[in-house]
Length: 238
Image 1 (cartoon, rainbow, N blue to C red):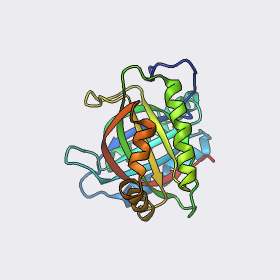
Image 2: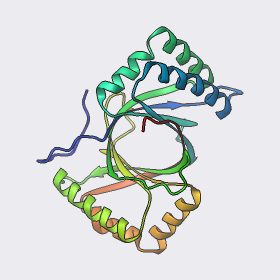
Image 3: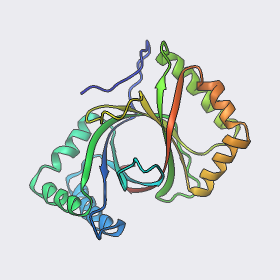
Image 4: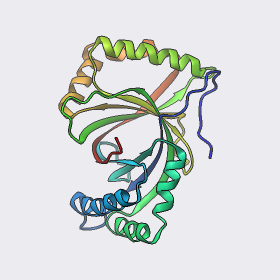
């Protein structure tokens, strides 16, 4: 397993081991059909006890280049636990549930990522839905991991000063990556809902947020290919 990371002198482990399934709905199928299978999968997860949280990232703002209807994003506290979750889906009951998933939502690709939390989300509404903005980021030549960590501290200080409740983190790519992905990592920011997402955009565009981010990270990386997803959490081990 190779997780791509920037050069660094200070090691910092990912906060979670993650796998992502890129999926489309089969003809005549929709979210209701997906949630019926997910309920059965949750019962199996409860019985077997694997440590695995899961979210459905449905596309919201995107280009016609995006072939997926949604991404199934799973996360475990360690790679061993993620491997356990994968292995249990290869047992007879897991195979049966997987076949039901595939009939409802055929899988386009399956990639693993190492997720590194930069800022913890402080949800105000306490429900299972949210919004996530994701961009592709490429490190400037010569950027070190220590420089990125120092910038993260500035980012958190700025976010505190603006009373930003949303979370943020980096997704470092691992196995199964499509050749079209040419960045070093994904940067994601979360909000509770589309209203809070809109407030965050207002702050970025009209409140100096873009200038602040440029001053914090601009010399270290460039980011593009922005997309926005509606997020539904379907399992939590917290």
